[in-house]
Length: 356
Ligand SMILES: *Cc1c(COP(=O)(O)O)cnc(C)c1O
Image: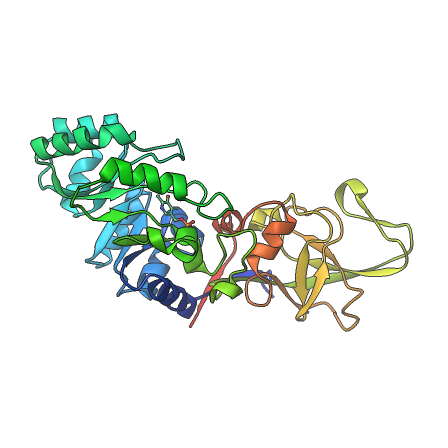
């Protein structure tokens, strides 16, 4: 038998979660965000599942090119734009849309005459303070793009720092509106969190990332409560059972000590598969459909679980690390991180199986 770990990717979940976004923002276009290889799900797989998406947004030029070459004719947006002028020929040639977020990119657009005009998303910094033009730089940038003749269209864009939290987006919206007042151009503001929490930010085009994969952008609202379905289920099996006596320890560093006699299950999944090494004892795992806690350190190829709650478990019992029956967000919360990180970190050695 092959090593039993695999990731099941449910294609219908992408369709369901994309439809949930369209229902939440019925008057907006929705770009499916597929950066980082579709948050670990496979960029081409996501695109194949969503042939009628309004568009896709990604970060890596090679992925954008592959989507175009695979036959997707709609909008493909590069979320960080280009990193050197040499990329502009490819962007123009493949009719990709690009974010323009700073002086360097503006200058390169002015200096190089691309073979065709490019759809530009002018990114405005409204408080995230990573990328984006200062609000006062927006009108001069528009004039320069106009003068250069390199923009086929311009969409005004921002990205929120706190759409998922109690701070909300009030201040960012005020800055965006001040910077763009009176400009008759389309707008794109919302990520998944704003899509579900801030309808006033839906505007013309939303950018749905994490929700497309069936995980939540919020610390306090589950994916299920948003009507989302998990797209990735990471599955494995028990490959051994250990019966421990009271006082015996488990795993590297002997960080877990059995309080009394206990049955321990050894799961074929470790940090080299993408399971977070920092997940502490007590992180939830499903064994034969029953939620049990991990016990001891995550190692490279194995984790260990307390089988007290599943007396019938045996070698070969089915394990779900996250996905259907166990939200990735619950595992992430236990490990002190977010579902995004776990999904993106799925390791190349894990075989993927597509399920309808
Ligand atoms: C990644 C990204 C998104 C998607 O964010 P989610 O929280 O995953 O929905 C939207 N916009 C930009 C600019 C991004 O980089």
